Image (cartoon, rainbow, N blue to C red; front, top):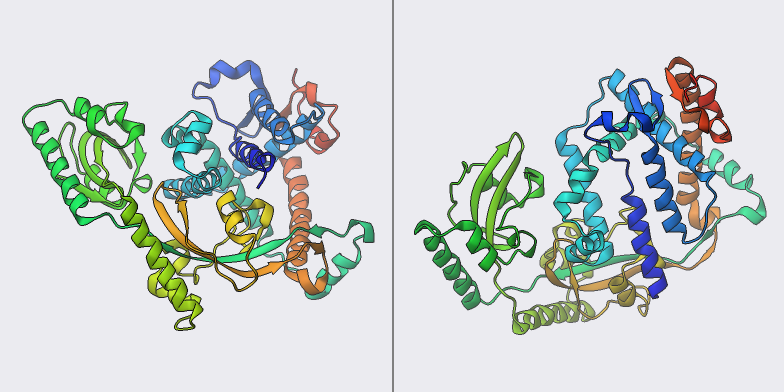
Length: 457
């Protein structure tokens, strides 16, 4: 994959992360309010942030008139959020945290590791999640209301055919090469001697804490969690879902300044000190001792995958059976090793959208072939090895009903749902209080909002 294409990945992530952040002190921004919808307001900075990100994403000059389109999208979301409050639609804290986790896992995967991700934004995962939590909740509320508006919309085969035949011949979409891939994953196991040594090291530090030595100092000196070690082991307030289960179970029971026993998790061994709990969030310090993988540990994992690959090639087992029997990746194991596109939930990926490591594993394979074992880093920064199998490849082509019926159906369905939403939007705007700054009255895309707006300078 070219450097230019990889830079586009980074810009794409930046655009995805571009969310409006509601100010903590609204009074500081009263002069920047450019629109009010019901009880929801829009700040000029909301529009400017998204406009700047669009400029960065396009890597070329774009017209300032695009701000009209940006504002139109924000107004639609605010109206949906306002409707959610009117209808008492709720989003739970767990739903917000799960969505944050899902998105950040995707972003981390695209950048290769959590360290790369945090370095790119110069902020920790926790800090970034705190920034986007309110915006994500608003997006989920808006999506929930919008889905109820269009949930009964369907398209018949005849509608799909009519939709496709109505597309001008020179406008029929072109599909890039797509692939369907599956994997078998093995995680290297730490040598038991190293495991025991690491545990003894953790016990020794725990004894020093019991003898009165400062927890923060020892965390700074010995913790193998680089993000928190520089802060004396302190983590920010974290939701239960942001922590591995073994860690969370102990952390949420600790009182201020109390020290845990040694806790084992998938990351290693922890000593945890309680700081404060606020409802479903907890702040703690911890010292992490991570058993080190050796080159021989990695070689054992690679050789195991090689043996599994040989079993499949010798037809002593099938790939799917091998996934069920050997693969250690819980996310893909339940689907026969199949990987799914986080953007649309489809098992098909455009080759240009694959991570560099996946792309180079797949590019020379024929359908049905498997790669040699390749090393990679999981989204939670664990070293692993995997075999990639190319299940299916669809060459670049112009869309047709024969080969792309599902994609065409989804597009037709999307347009039908969009039409229903616009009908709802027109009716709701007529019944809602809208106050739009006069500086945006020139925008053609905002004409619908202007008809009901109380103009404000």
